Amino acid sequence: MLDKLTTEMRNQHSMHLDEMSTMEILETMNKEDEQVLTAIKEQLPQIEKASKYAIESFKKNGRLIYVGAGTSGRLGVLDAVECVPTFGTPSEMVQGVIAGGMKALYEAAEGAEDNPELGAADLKNIQLSENDTVIGIAASGRTPYVIGALQYADSKKANTVSVSCNKDAVMSQYASVAIELKTDAEVLTGSTRLKAGTAQKMTLNMISTAAMVGIGKVYQNFMVDLKPTNEKLLERSKRNIMEITGADYDTAASYFEKANNQVKVAIVMILLECSYDDAVNRLNNSDGFVRHALTK
Image 1: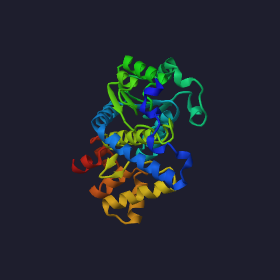
Image 2: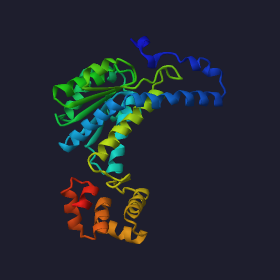
Image 3: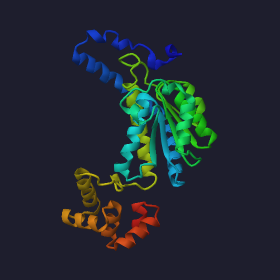
Image 4: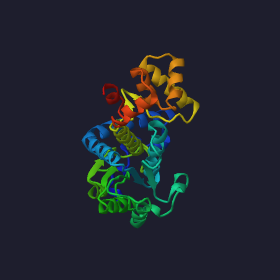
């Protein structure tokens, strides 16, 4: 089947890759990468559906779960772990499940991706429920591990999404929403960590970010639920408060401390000149949306 996949075909623009200068290689790759944006644009309606699935799950206290093998699995784990500091989410809210377990992040898991039962078992182990959204990721669109996971997710009545990089992917048959990113042949034949990986990474970024906006983790275009887990994020938190409220640095820092290092609480406290308890109550009554809390 591999010879029928565009992601496995030879790219006519890089037939002499080994004879190119370094600059020619980079220019060729850069030119090919232009296809990524087009591929994503063509799938925006499907990406929108996937994002709404995630929002729906979050509102039901469900989870967004990425499932993949190899590069695709690593991209899912990457997007999941980045949600914690960026949006202040608990680690279980967005999860990455990878064939072979977390060891597969840095070491090949031989044969794990070829076992559909393992994909189902990994979701069973995290107690998948109908409130969750499962996004299966595979550049080829045919990875047995991912298909097994999607089949199990469907049996549990969870939302199912597939993200592949081939048209009419086998995996698409097992998902309620099929995202097919047609990135075509890679510069380095079969190396789907290139265009395919870039397209997948961008798509997952879009889904998780849109979903977080949809549940109140963003005000205007600022992160207002970020966790200040290091000096950079601590300073970003204070500067976000300054930008939104017009307060000076010392005032922002003071209210940030009064708000127990919660950016959105500090914002409401400053703009409404209210107490910590009042700000928290307003946010709770507004489902965490700062904009709604400010107008109630």
